[in-house]
Image (spheres, rainbow, N blue to C red):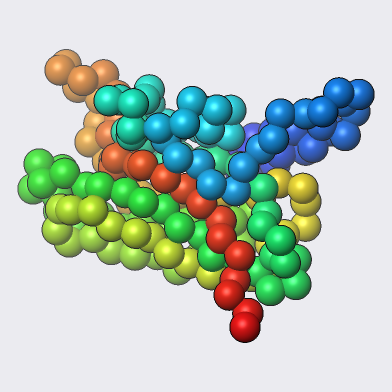
Length: 168
């Protein structure tokens, strides 16, 4: 269901910008949570901006990114900057993160301790078929909404980016 929603959103964004007579606001391939303009590319599963720098995510969260130059030929590198607090790991145990770039599944990664991490994966050129790339991230578990905090919580994210492949 989330994949379908993202596909429809991606096509709507593309159609909107294709029909604009004025210069459309630029979308980005680098979403820093500290940048308020990044919010329009956060599609699902992100909570409000905190301390002007980061956002909690739900178990599943999604973005759309603009492909960098050369991605239709060489692919690109997806980079997610995240932080997993110690109480989360203590409560849930190891957490596995996976991602789908459009409909291409990327290798998962398991986090066994708290700390700052970078989830970095190559996205093949075959994923770049549209003007925007939808990316859905999924943790295998999250803290359920409770009485103290009514949100589902999985990790803290500071940045999501698509970087060109270095082909020297």
